[in-house]
Image (cartoon, rainbow, N blue to C red; front, side, top):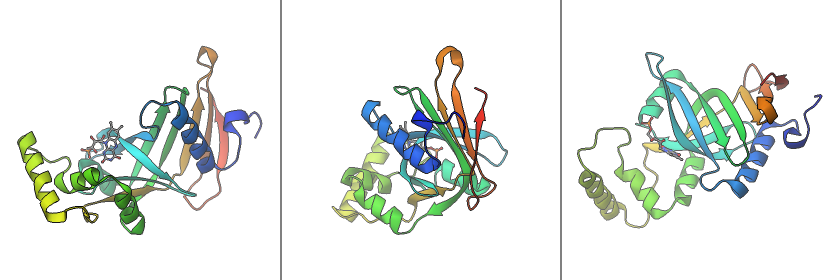
Length: 201
Ligand SMILES: Cc1cc2nc3c(=O)[nH]c(=O)nc-3n(C[C@H](O)[C@H](O)[C@H](O)COP(=O)(O)O)c2cc1C
């Protein structure tokens, strides 16, 4: 692909994303894996919020959340979503979109087990995106979760991952005079080969 070298080198966009995230780990002050997750509700009104992009696999990416949250309802309603990562320190952006399925097996168990005890108990305590009467109600629920599960809370069945299999991944790097570099990897389905195209900024 003519002109794709340096930070854009390589044919596998998952490898490229991992490389950019590794570089961001060295320069971002917080959450180099933070991504804006875009969904649509049933009226097609867009919604967006940050999540942590915890796993970049060989053909998909995974983030974790509460399965009764607003984002979960929107993901499951549409069956697809988009993510955007932006690293201010690197002046780079990555966009990813495609179909999404639940990841509620062993991988979700393993990831849940790797979280701090506080985060694991917090997952039990939070009815994410539902109305909460007061901070006290949350603290009461946390105390209840601690009493019930002690130091070994299992993964709640209402909490786990979503696996997005991209059909599009775009890599953007800031250029002088707004003449940025953009390369997009596209494929018709997650089982197809990628085509790479350079885009006008
Ligand atoms: C940097 C950052 C990372 C976040 N990571 C997650 C995450 O991985 N999972 C999650 O459920 N919420 C995460 N949140 C909170 C979400 O942005 C959001 O407030 C919450 O999930 C509820 O969204 P919803 O009501 O649209 O479902 C994060 C927030 C920030 C600012």
